[in-house]
Every structure is written in C-alpha cells, then in structure tokens.
Image (tube, rainbow, N blue to C red):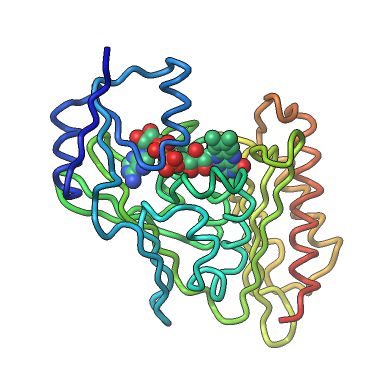
Length: 287
Ligand SMILES: Cc1cc2nc3c(=O)[nH]c(=O)nc-3n(C[C@H](O)[C@H](O)[C@H](O)COP(=O)(O)OP(=O)(O)OC[C@H]3O[C@@H](n4cnc5c(N)ncnc54)[C@H](O)[C@@H]3O)c2cc1C
C-alpha cells in the first residue's frame, strides 16, 4: 500500500491529524530512524505526517538567565555548531558532535533523537545531567516535561501519541559548573554508544564538591542517574578514590543490557571505569 505524506501547517494541525488517523499515521522529522523502520518493514503506516512544513521549530537561541532553547526540528549538526550551544554549553555541543556521522547529523533532528527513545543514544544522558525540559503540544494544549520524566522505557516516552515535541529547553548552569560527555564505542567509530557517561561538577569556594551529577546512557531502557551515589561527593574534596567509589556505586546499582555492543558483564565494568574517568577529567579542568 502506498504511503500518503501529509503536510500540516501548524503544530495543532499535526497533532489533530495524528489523533484522527491514530496508529495508521506516523510523525516524521529527519526520517533517519523512521525510514529505516519503513525499509525493514517494521512499520507500515498509511500516512506520514511531515513535521518539516511546520514554521518556527528550527531556531536555536540563548538568553542570559533563561538558558538555551532548541526547536525540535533543529538538526543535530545545527545544534552542534550553533554559537548558542558551543559558547554556553560546550559539553552539549560535543555530545551532539559525537552522534553517528556528519550525514546523519545533518538530517536527524534534536527532537527526533529524543522521541525515538533508542536506549543507545548520546544526547539524552547529557540533557538529563543538564536538567533539560521538553515542550509538548497536543489537542489539550502545551505542557512541559522534565527530561528526567520523559523516558519511560526502551523506545517509550511520556509523549501521548497525538503530542508533538516542539522544543528542548536547557536552564543556565550555575556559575562554575563543568561538564563532560564520554562516549565509549565497541564497533565502528560512527556507531551508537556501548556506554555513554555525562557528568557535571561544581566546586564551592573552598574547593570541595558542591554539586556532582552523573548520568549513564546506553546501558538500560532509560538514562541512569543515582542521586545517592552523587551525594557521596558532597562537601568532599575531589579525589580519585572518591570518584572511584561513585563509579563502583553506579556499576553495582545499574542492571545493564546485553546486546551486540557489549555483554552486561562488560558494560558493568565499563560503567565503573568511565564514571570515575569522567569525574577525574572534570576535577582536573581549570575552572
Ligand atoms: C546510521 C545511524 C547511526 C546513528 N548513530 C547514533 C549515535 O551514535 N548516537 C545517537 O544518539 N543517535 C544515533 N542515531 C540515531 C539518530 O540520532 C536518530 O535516528 C535521529 O535523531 C532521529 O531523528 P529524526 O529527526 O531523523 O527522527 P525520525 O526518524 O523522523 O523520527 C524518529 C521517531 O520520532 C518521532 N518523532 C520525530 N520527531 C518528533 C517530534 N518532534 N514530536 C513527536 N514525535 C517525533 C517519529 O514519529 C519517529 O517515531 C543513529 C542513526 C542512524 C541512522
């Protein structure tokens, strides 16, 4: 059966079309994930609702005090290169730079990367560490979802079927916050991560840890953050032994997936190494 492409002019129209056609329709943004599913006959929708005709969802901007706003249809390459991201959120720009290859990054959108909810993705862990929020619009209006509540399980998000993700917002990090993303790959250099670790660190004026965040991606259905392990650092001076203790806590608590990129046993060992490595790297940065 032929697929009909629908081209709504507004987000409300896109949501209404999705509601009207139900499971017979799929929203499409960059198409990098969706077209693969169509080609492999994993899905066979009657309608594709293109989001590419929607105006105003490609802007990437930064306002001091307010933070970063990325329209859901901005491409990953656009986000990686935008001054708003590079100048104010360099670790996020670096995370986007580490996604796939340049061809995929020019087509794939920042919104599609989240809504696909593939566990083996890079930006989700960094966005959780940065406390991002997403805007979703549907028949009942617009709502904001904290990114920590957005991913529910493998390929499952908090979006209702007739909601469109329209924007990602990242608050301004507290002054002095350092951030990094380590992507560990086991196959080709353009592959998805076996383990990804996003970490942030802020020291108090006396040089002790004031705020530590660690989010491990690609090892389970959703990005993994353990506040009780992060709290081990609070008030203590940065030290390799302390960071290893946090790495051990993550390795013990996470129940990793077994897949082609690595066994559960291997992933657990890599989590242990990479969490400590990310924190040591942040501690050695000049602030
Ligand atoms: C070869 C290859 C390598 C890759 N490697 C990596 C990698 O290393 N790291 C990584 O993080 N990712 C990787 N990816 C995944 C890539 O980032 C995603 O395919 C991409 O981000 C999806 O974005 P898209 O705009 O193409 O979405 P689409 O393919 O258009 O859509 C994906 C899903 O999201 C839904 N959707 C899209 N936009 C919206 C929206 N605004 N609101 C509601 N629903 C929406 C669609 O209905 C569909 O279900 C790779 C992909 C490929 C093809």
